[in-house]
Image (cartoon, rainbow, N blue to C red; front, side, top):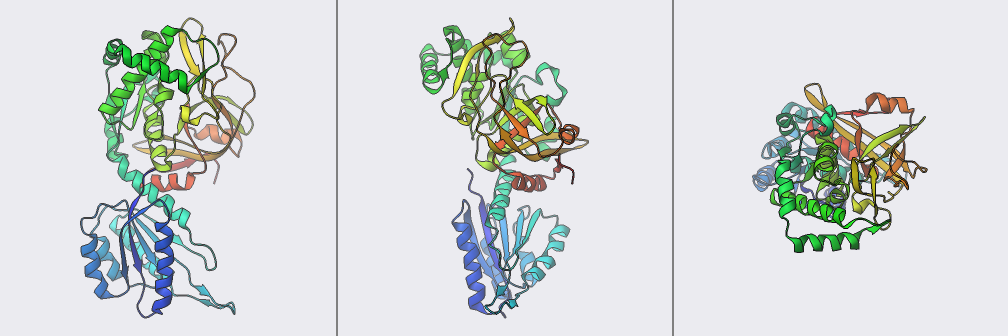
Length: 453
């Protein structure tokens, strides 16, 4: 996981008791330092003589986020010139609370006054920010602060990220189409096109020793449920090696190859297992050249430090959605040892696919989509459960168990159906909705939850 690089500006007013101010400042500084952040700059600004040294200290710094911690009332005109030294860096404006003494009396140092004096200036200056106002007697909100720091680091990393697509919009699907210029302008991520002929040529030219070693590695990493033909394993290994090489050469954050009307039809094997081996927290992989899905996957993996994955909709129930894939699953998401089997759908879809189970529990569901001239983010929480026995119509007996989950979306499925922007959604285990909202705010994306407000 990325360690956000932050500046911590502890801001107060020198007329208040110094010992109390410094104690509260130390609580926030030490609490942040104990978490997954790098405090590149730490400065205390209590009076006007603190301004110029702090400006000089910040100037030219490489930062993901500035944390402005108001420990008490603070004169805004001290702080604004400091922030002007680091234009474009998002701000977490955080007001900690006062002290309740043993008699129950609240001693308020007026940090909310400093907070509400700064926020209009941030809006006027066009600064992306998040505000936290703590409640007396409650714990410090470190998790919320850390989530925003990760969002800041993710937004910055996206501006130098790149994905590769081998082919365009599998099956001509409109939801897989994309505008490269718009993605680069709004999200910051670039999209490269890689010629499928090159991939095929490099598969044929792969050194036999590397292919044999890749086949051995696949057998060591995955348990096979039936006999997989040697020629299938050979093709899977070659495709895996070529996509891995391409990703490394181009320093890609994500890759996808045309499947149904690409590799599967013209190269003699489906790409499911090759892509499952590639996928991880540092390289996002999904199917069908779904650009917006792949960008979402990159965003969520960068934000969470996890391997995230796409899922397709298969059935709807009253409050549940059956999602799965027809053979793809990052092996790091397998519950227990990864499993796969040779299987086919008629004479067309031949090869092997993953059959691993996914873990149950809370998940975050998201998908980036084009929203008029801009972009929106479909986003929400669900509870994932293991589904009953099922299969897509037409698969050869004995049918494979698809990697899949039943998602309880917490409201009537019609709410979900009316808002979902495509056949694919991206899943991350755990509740990351708050930090995803923060990321969307930093990128200027409108959030579209499926639960009515």
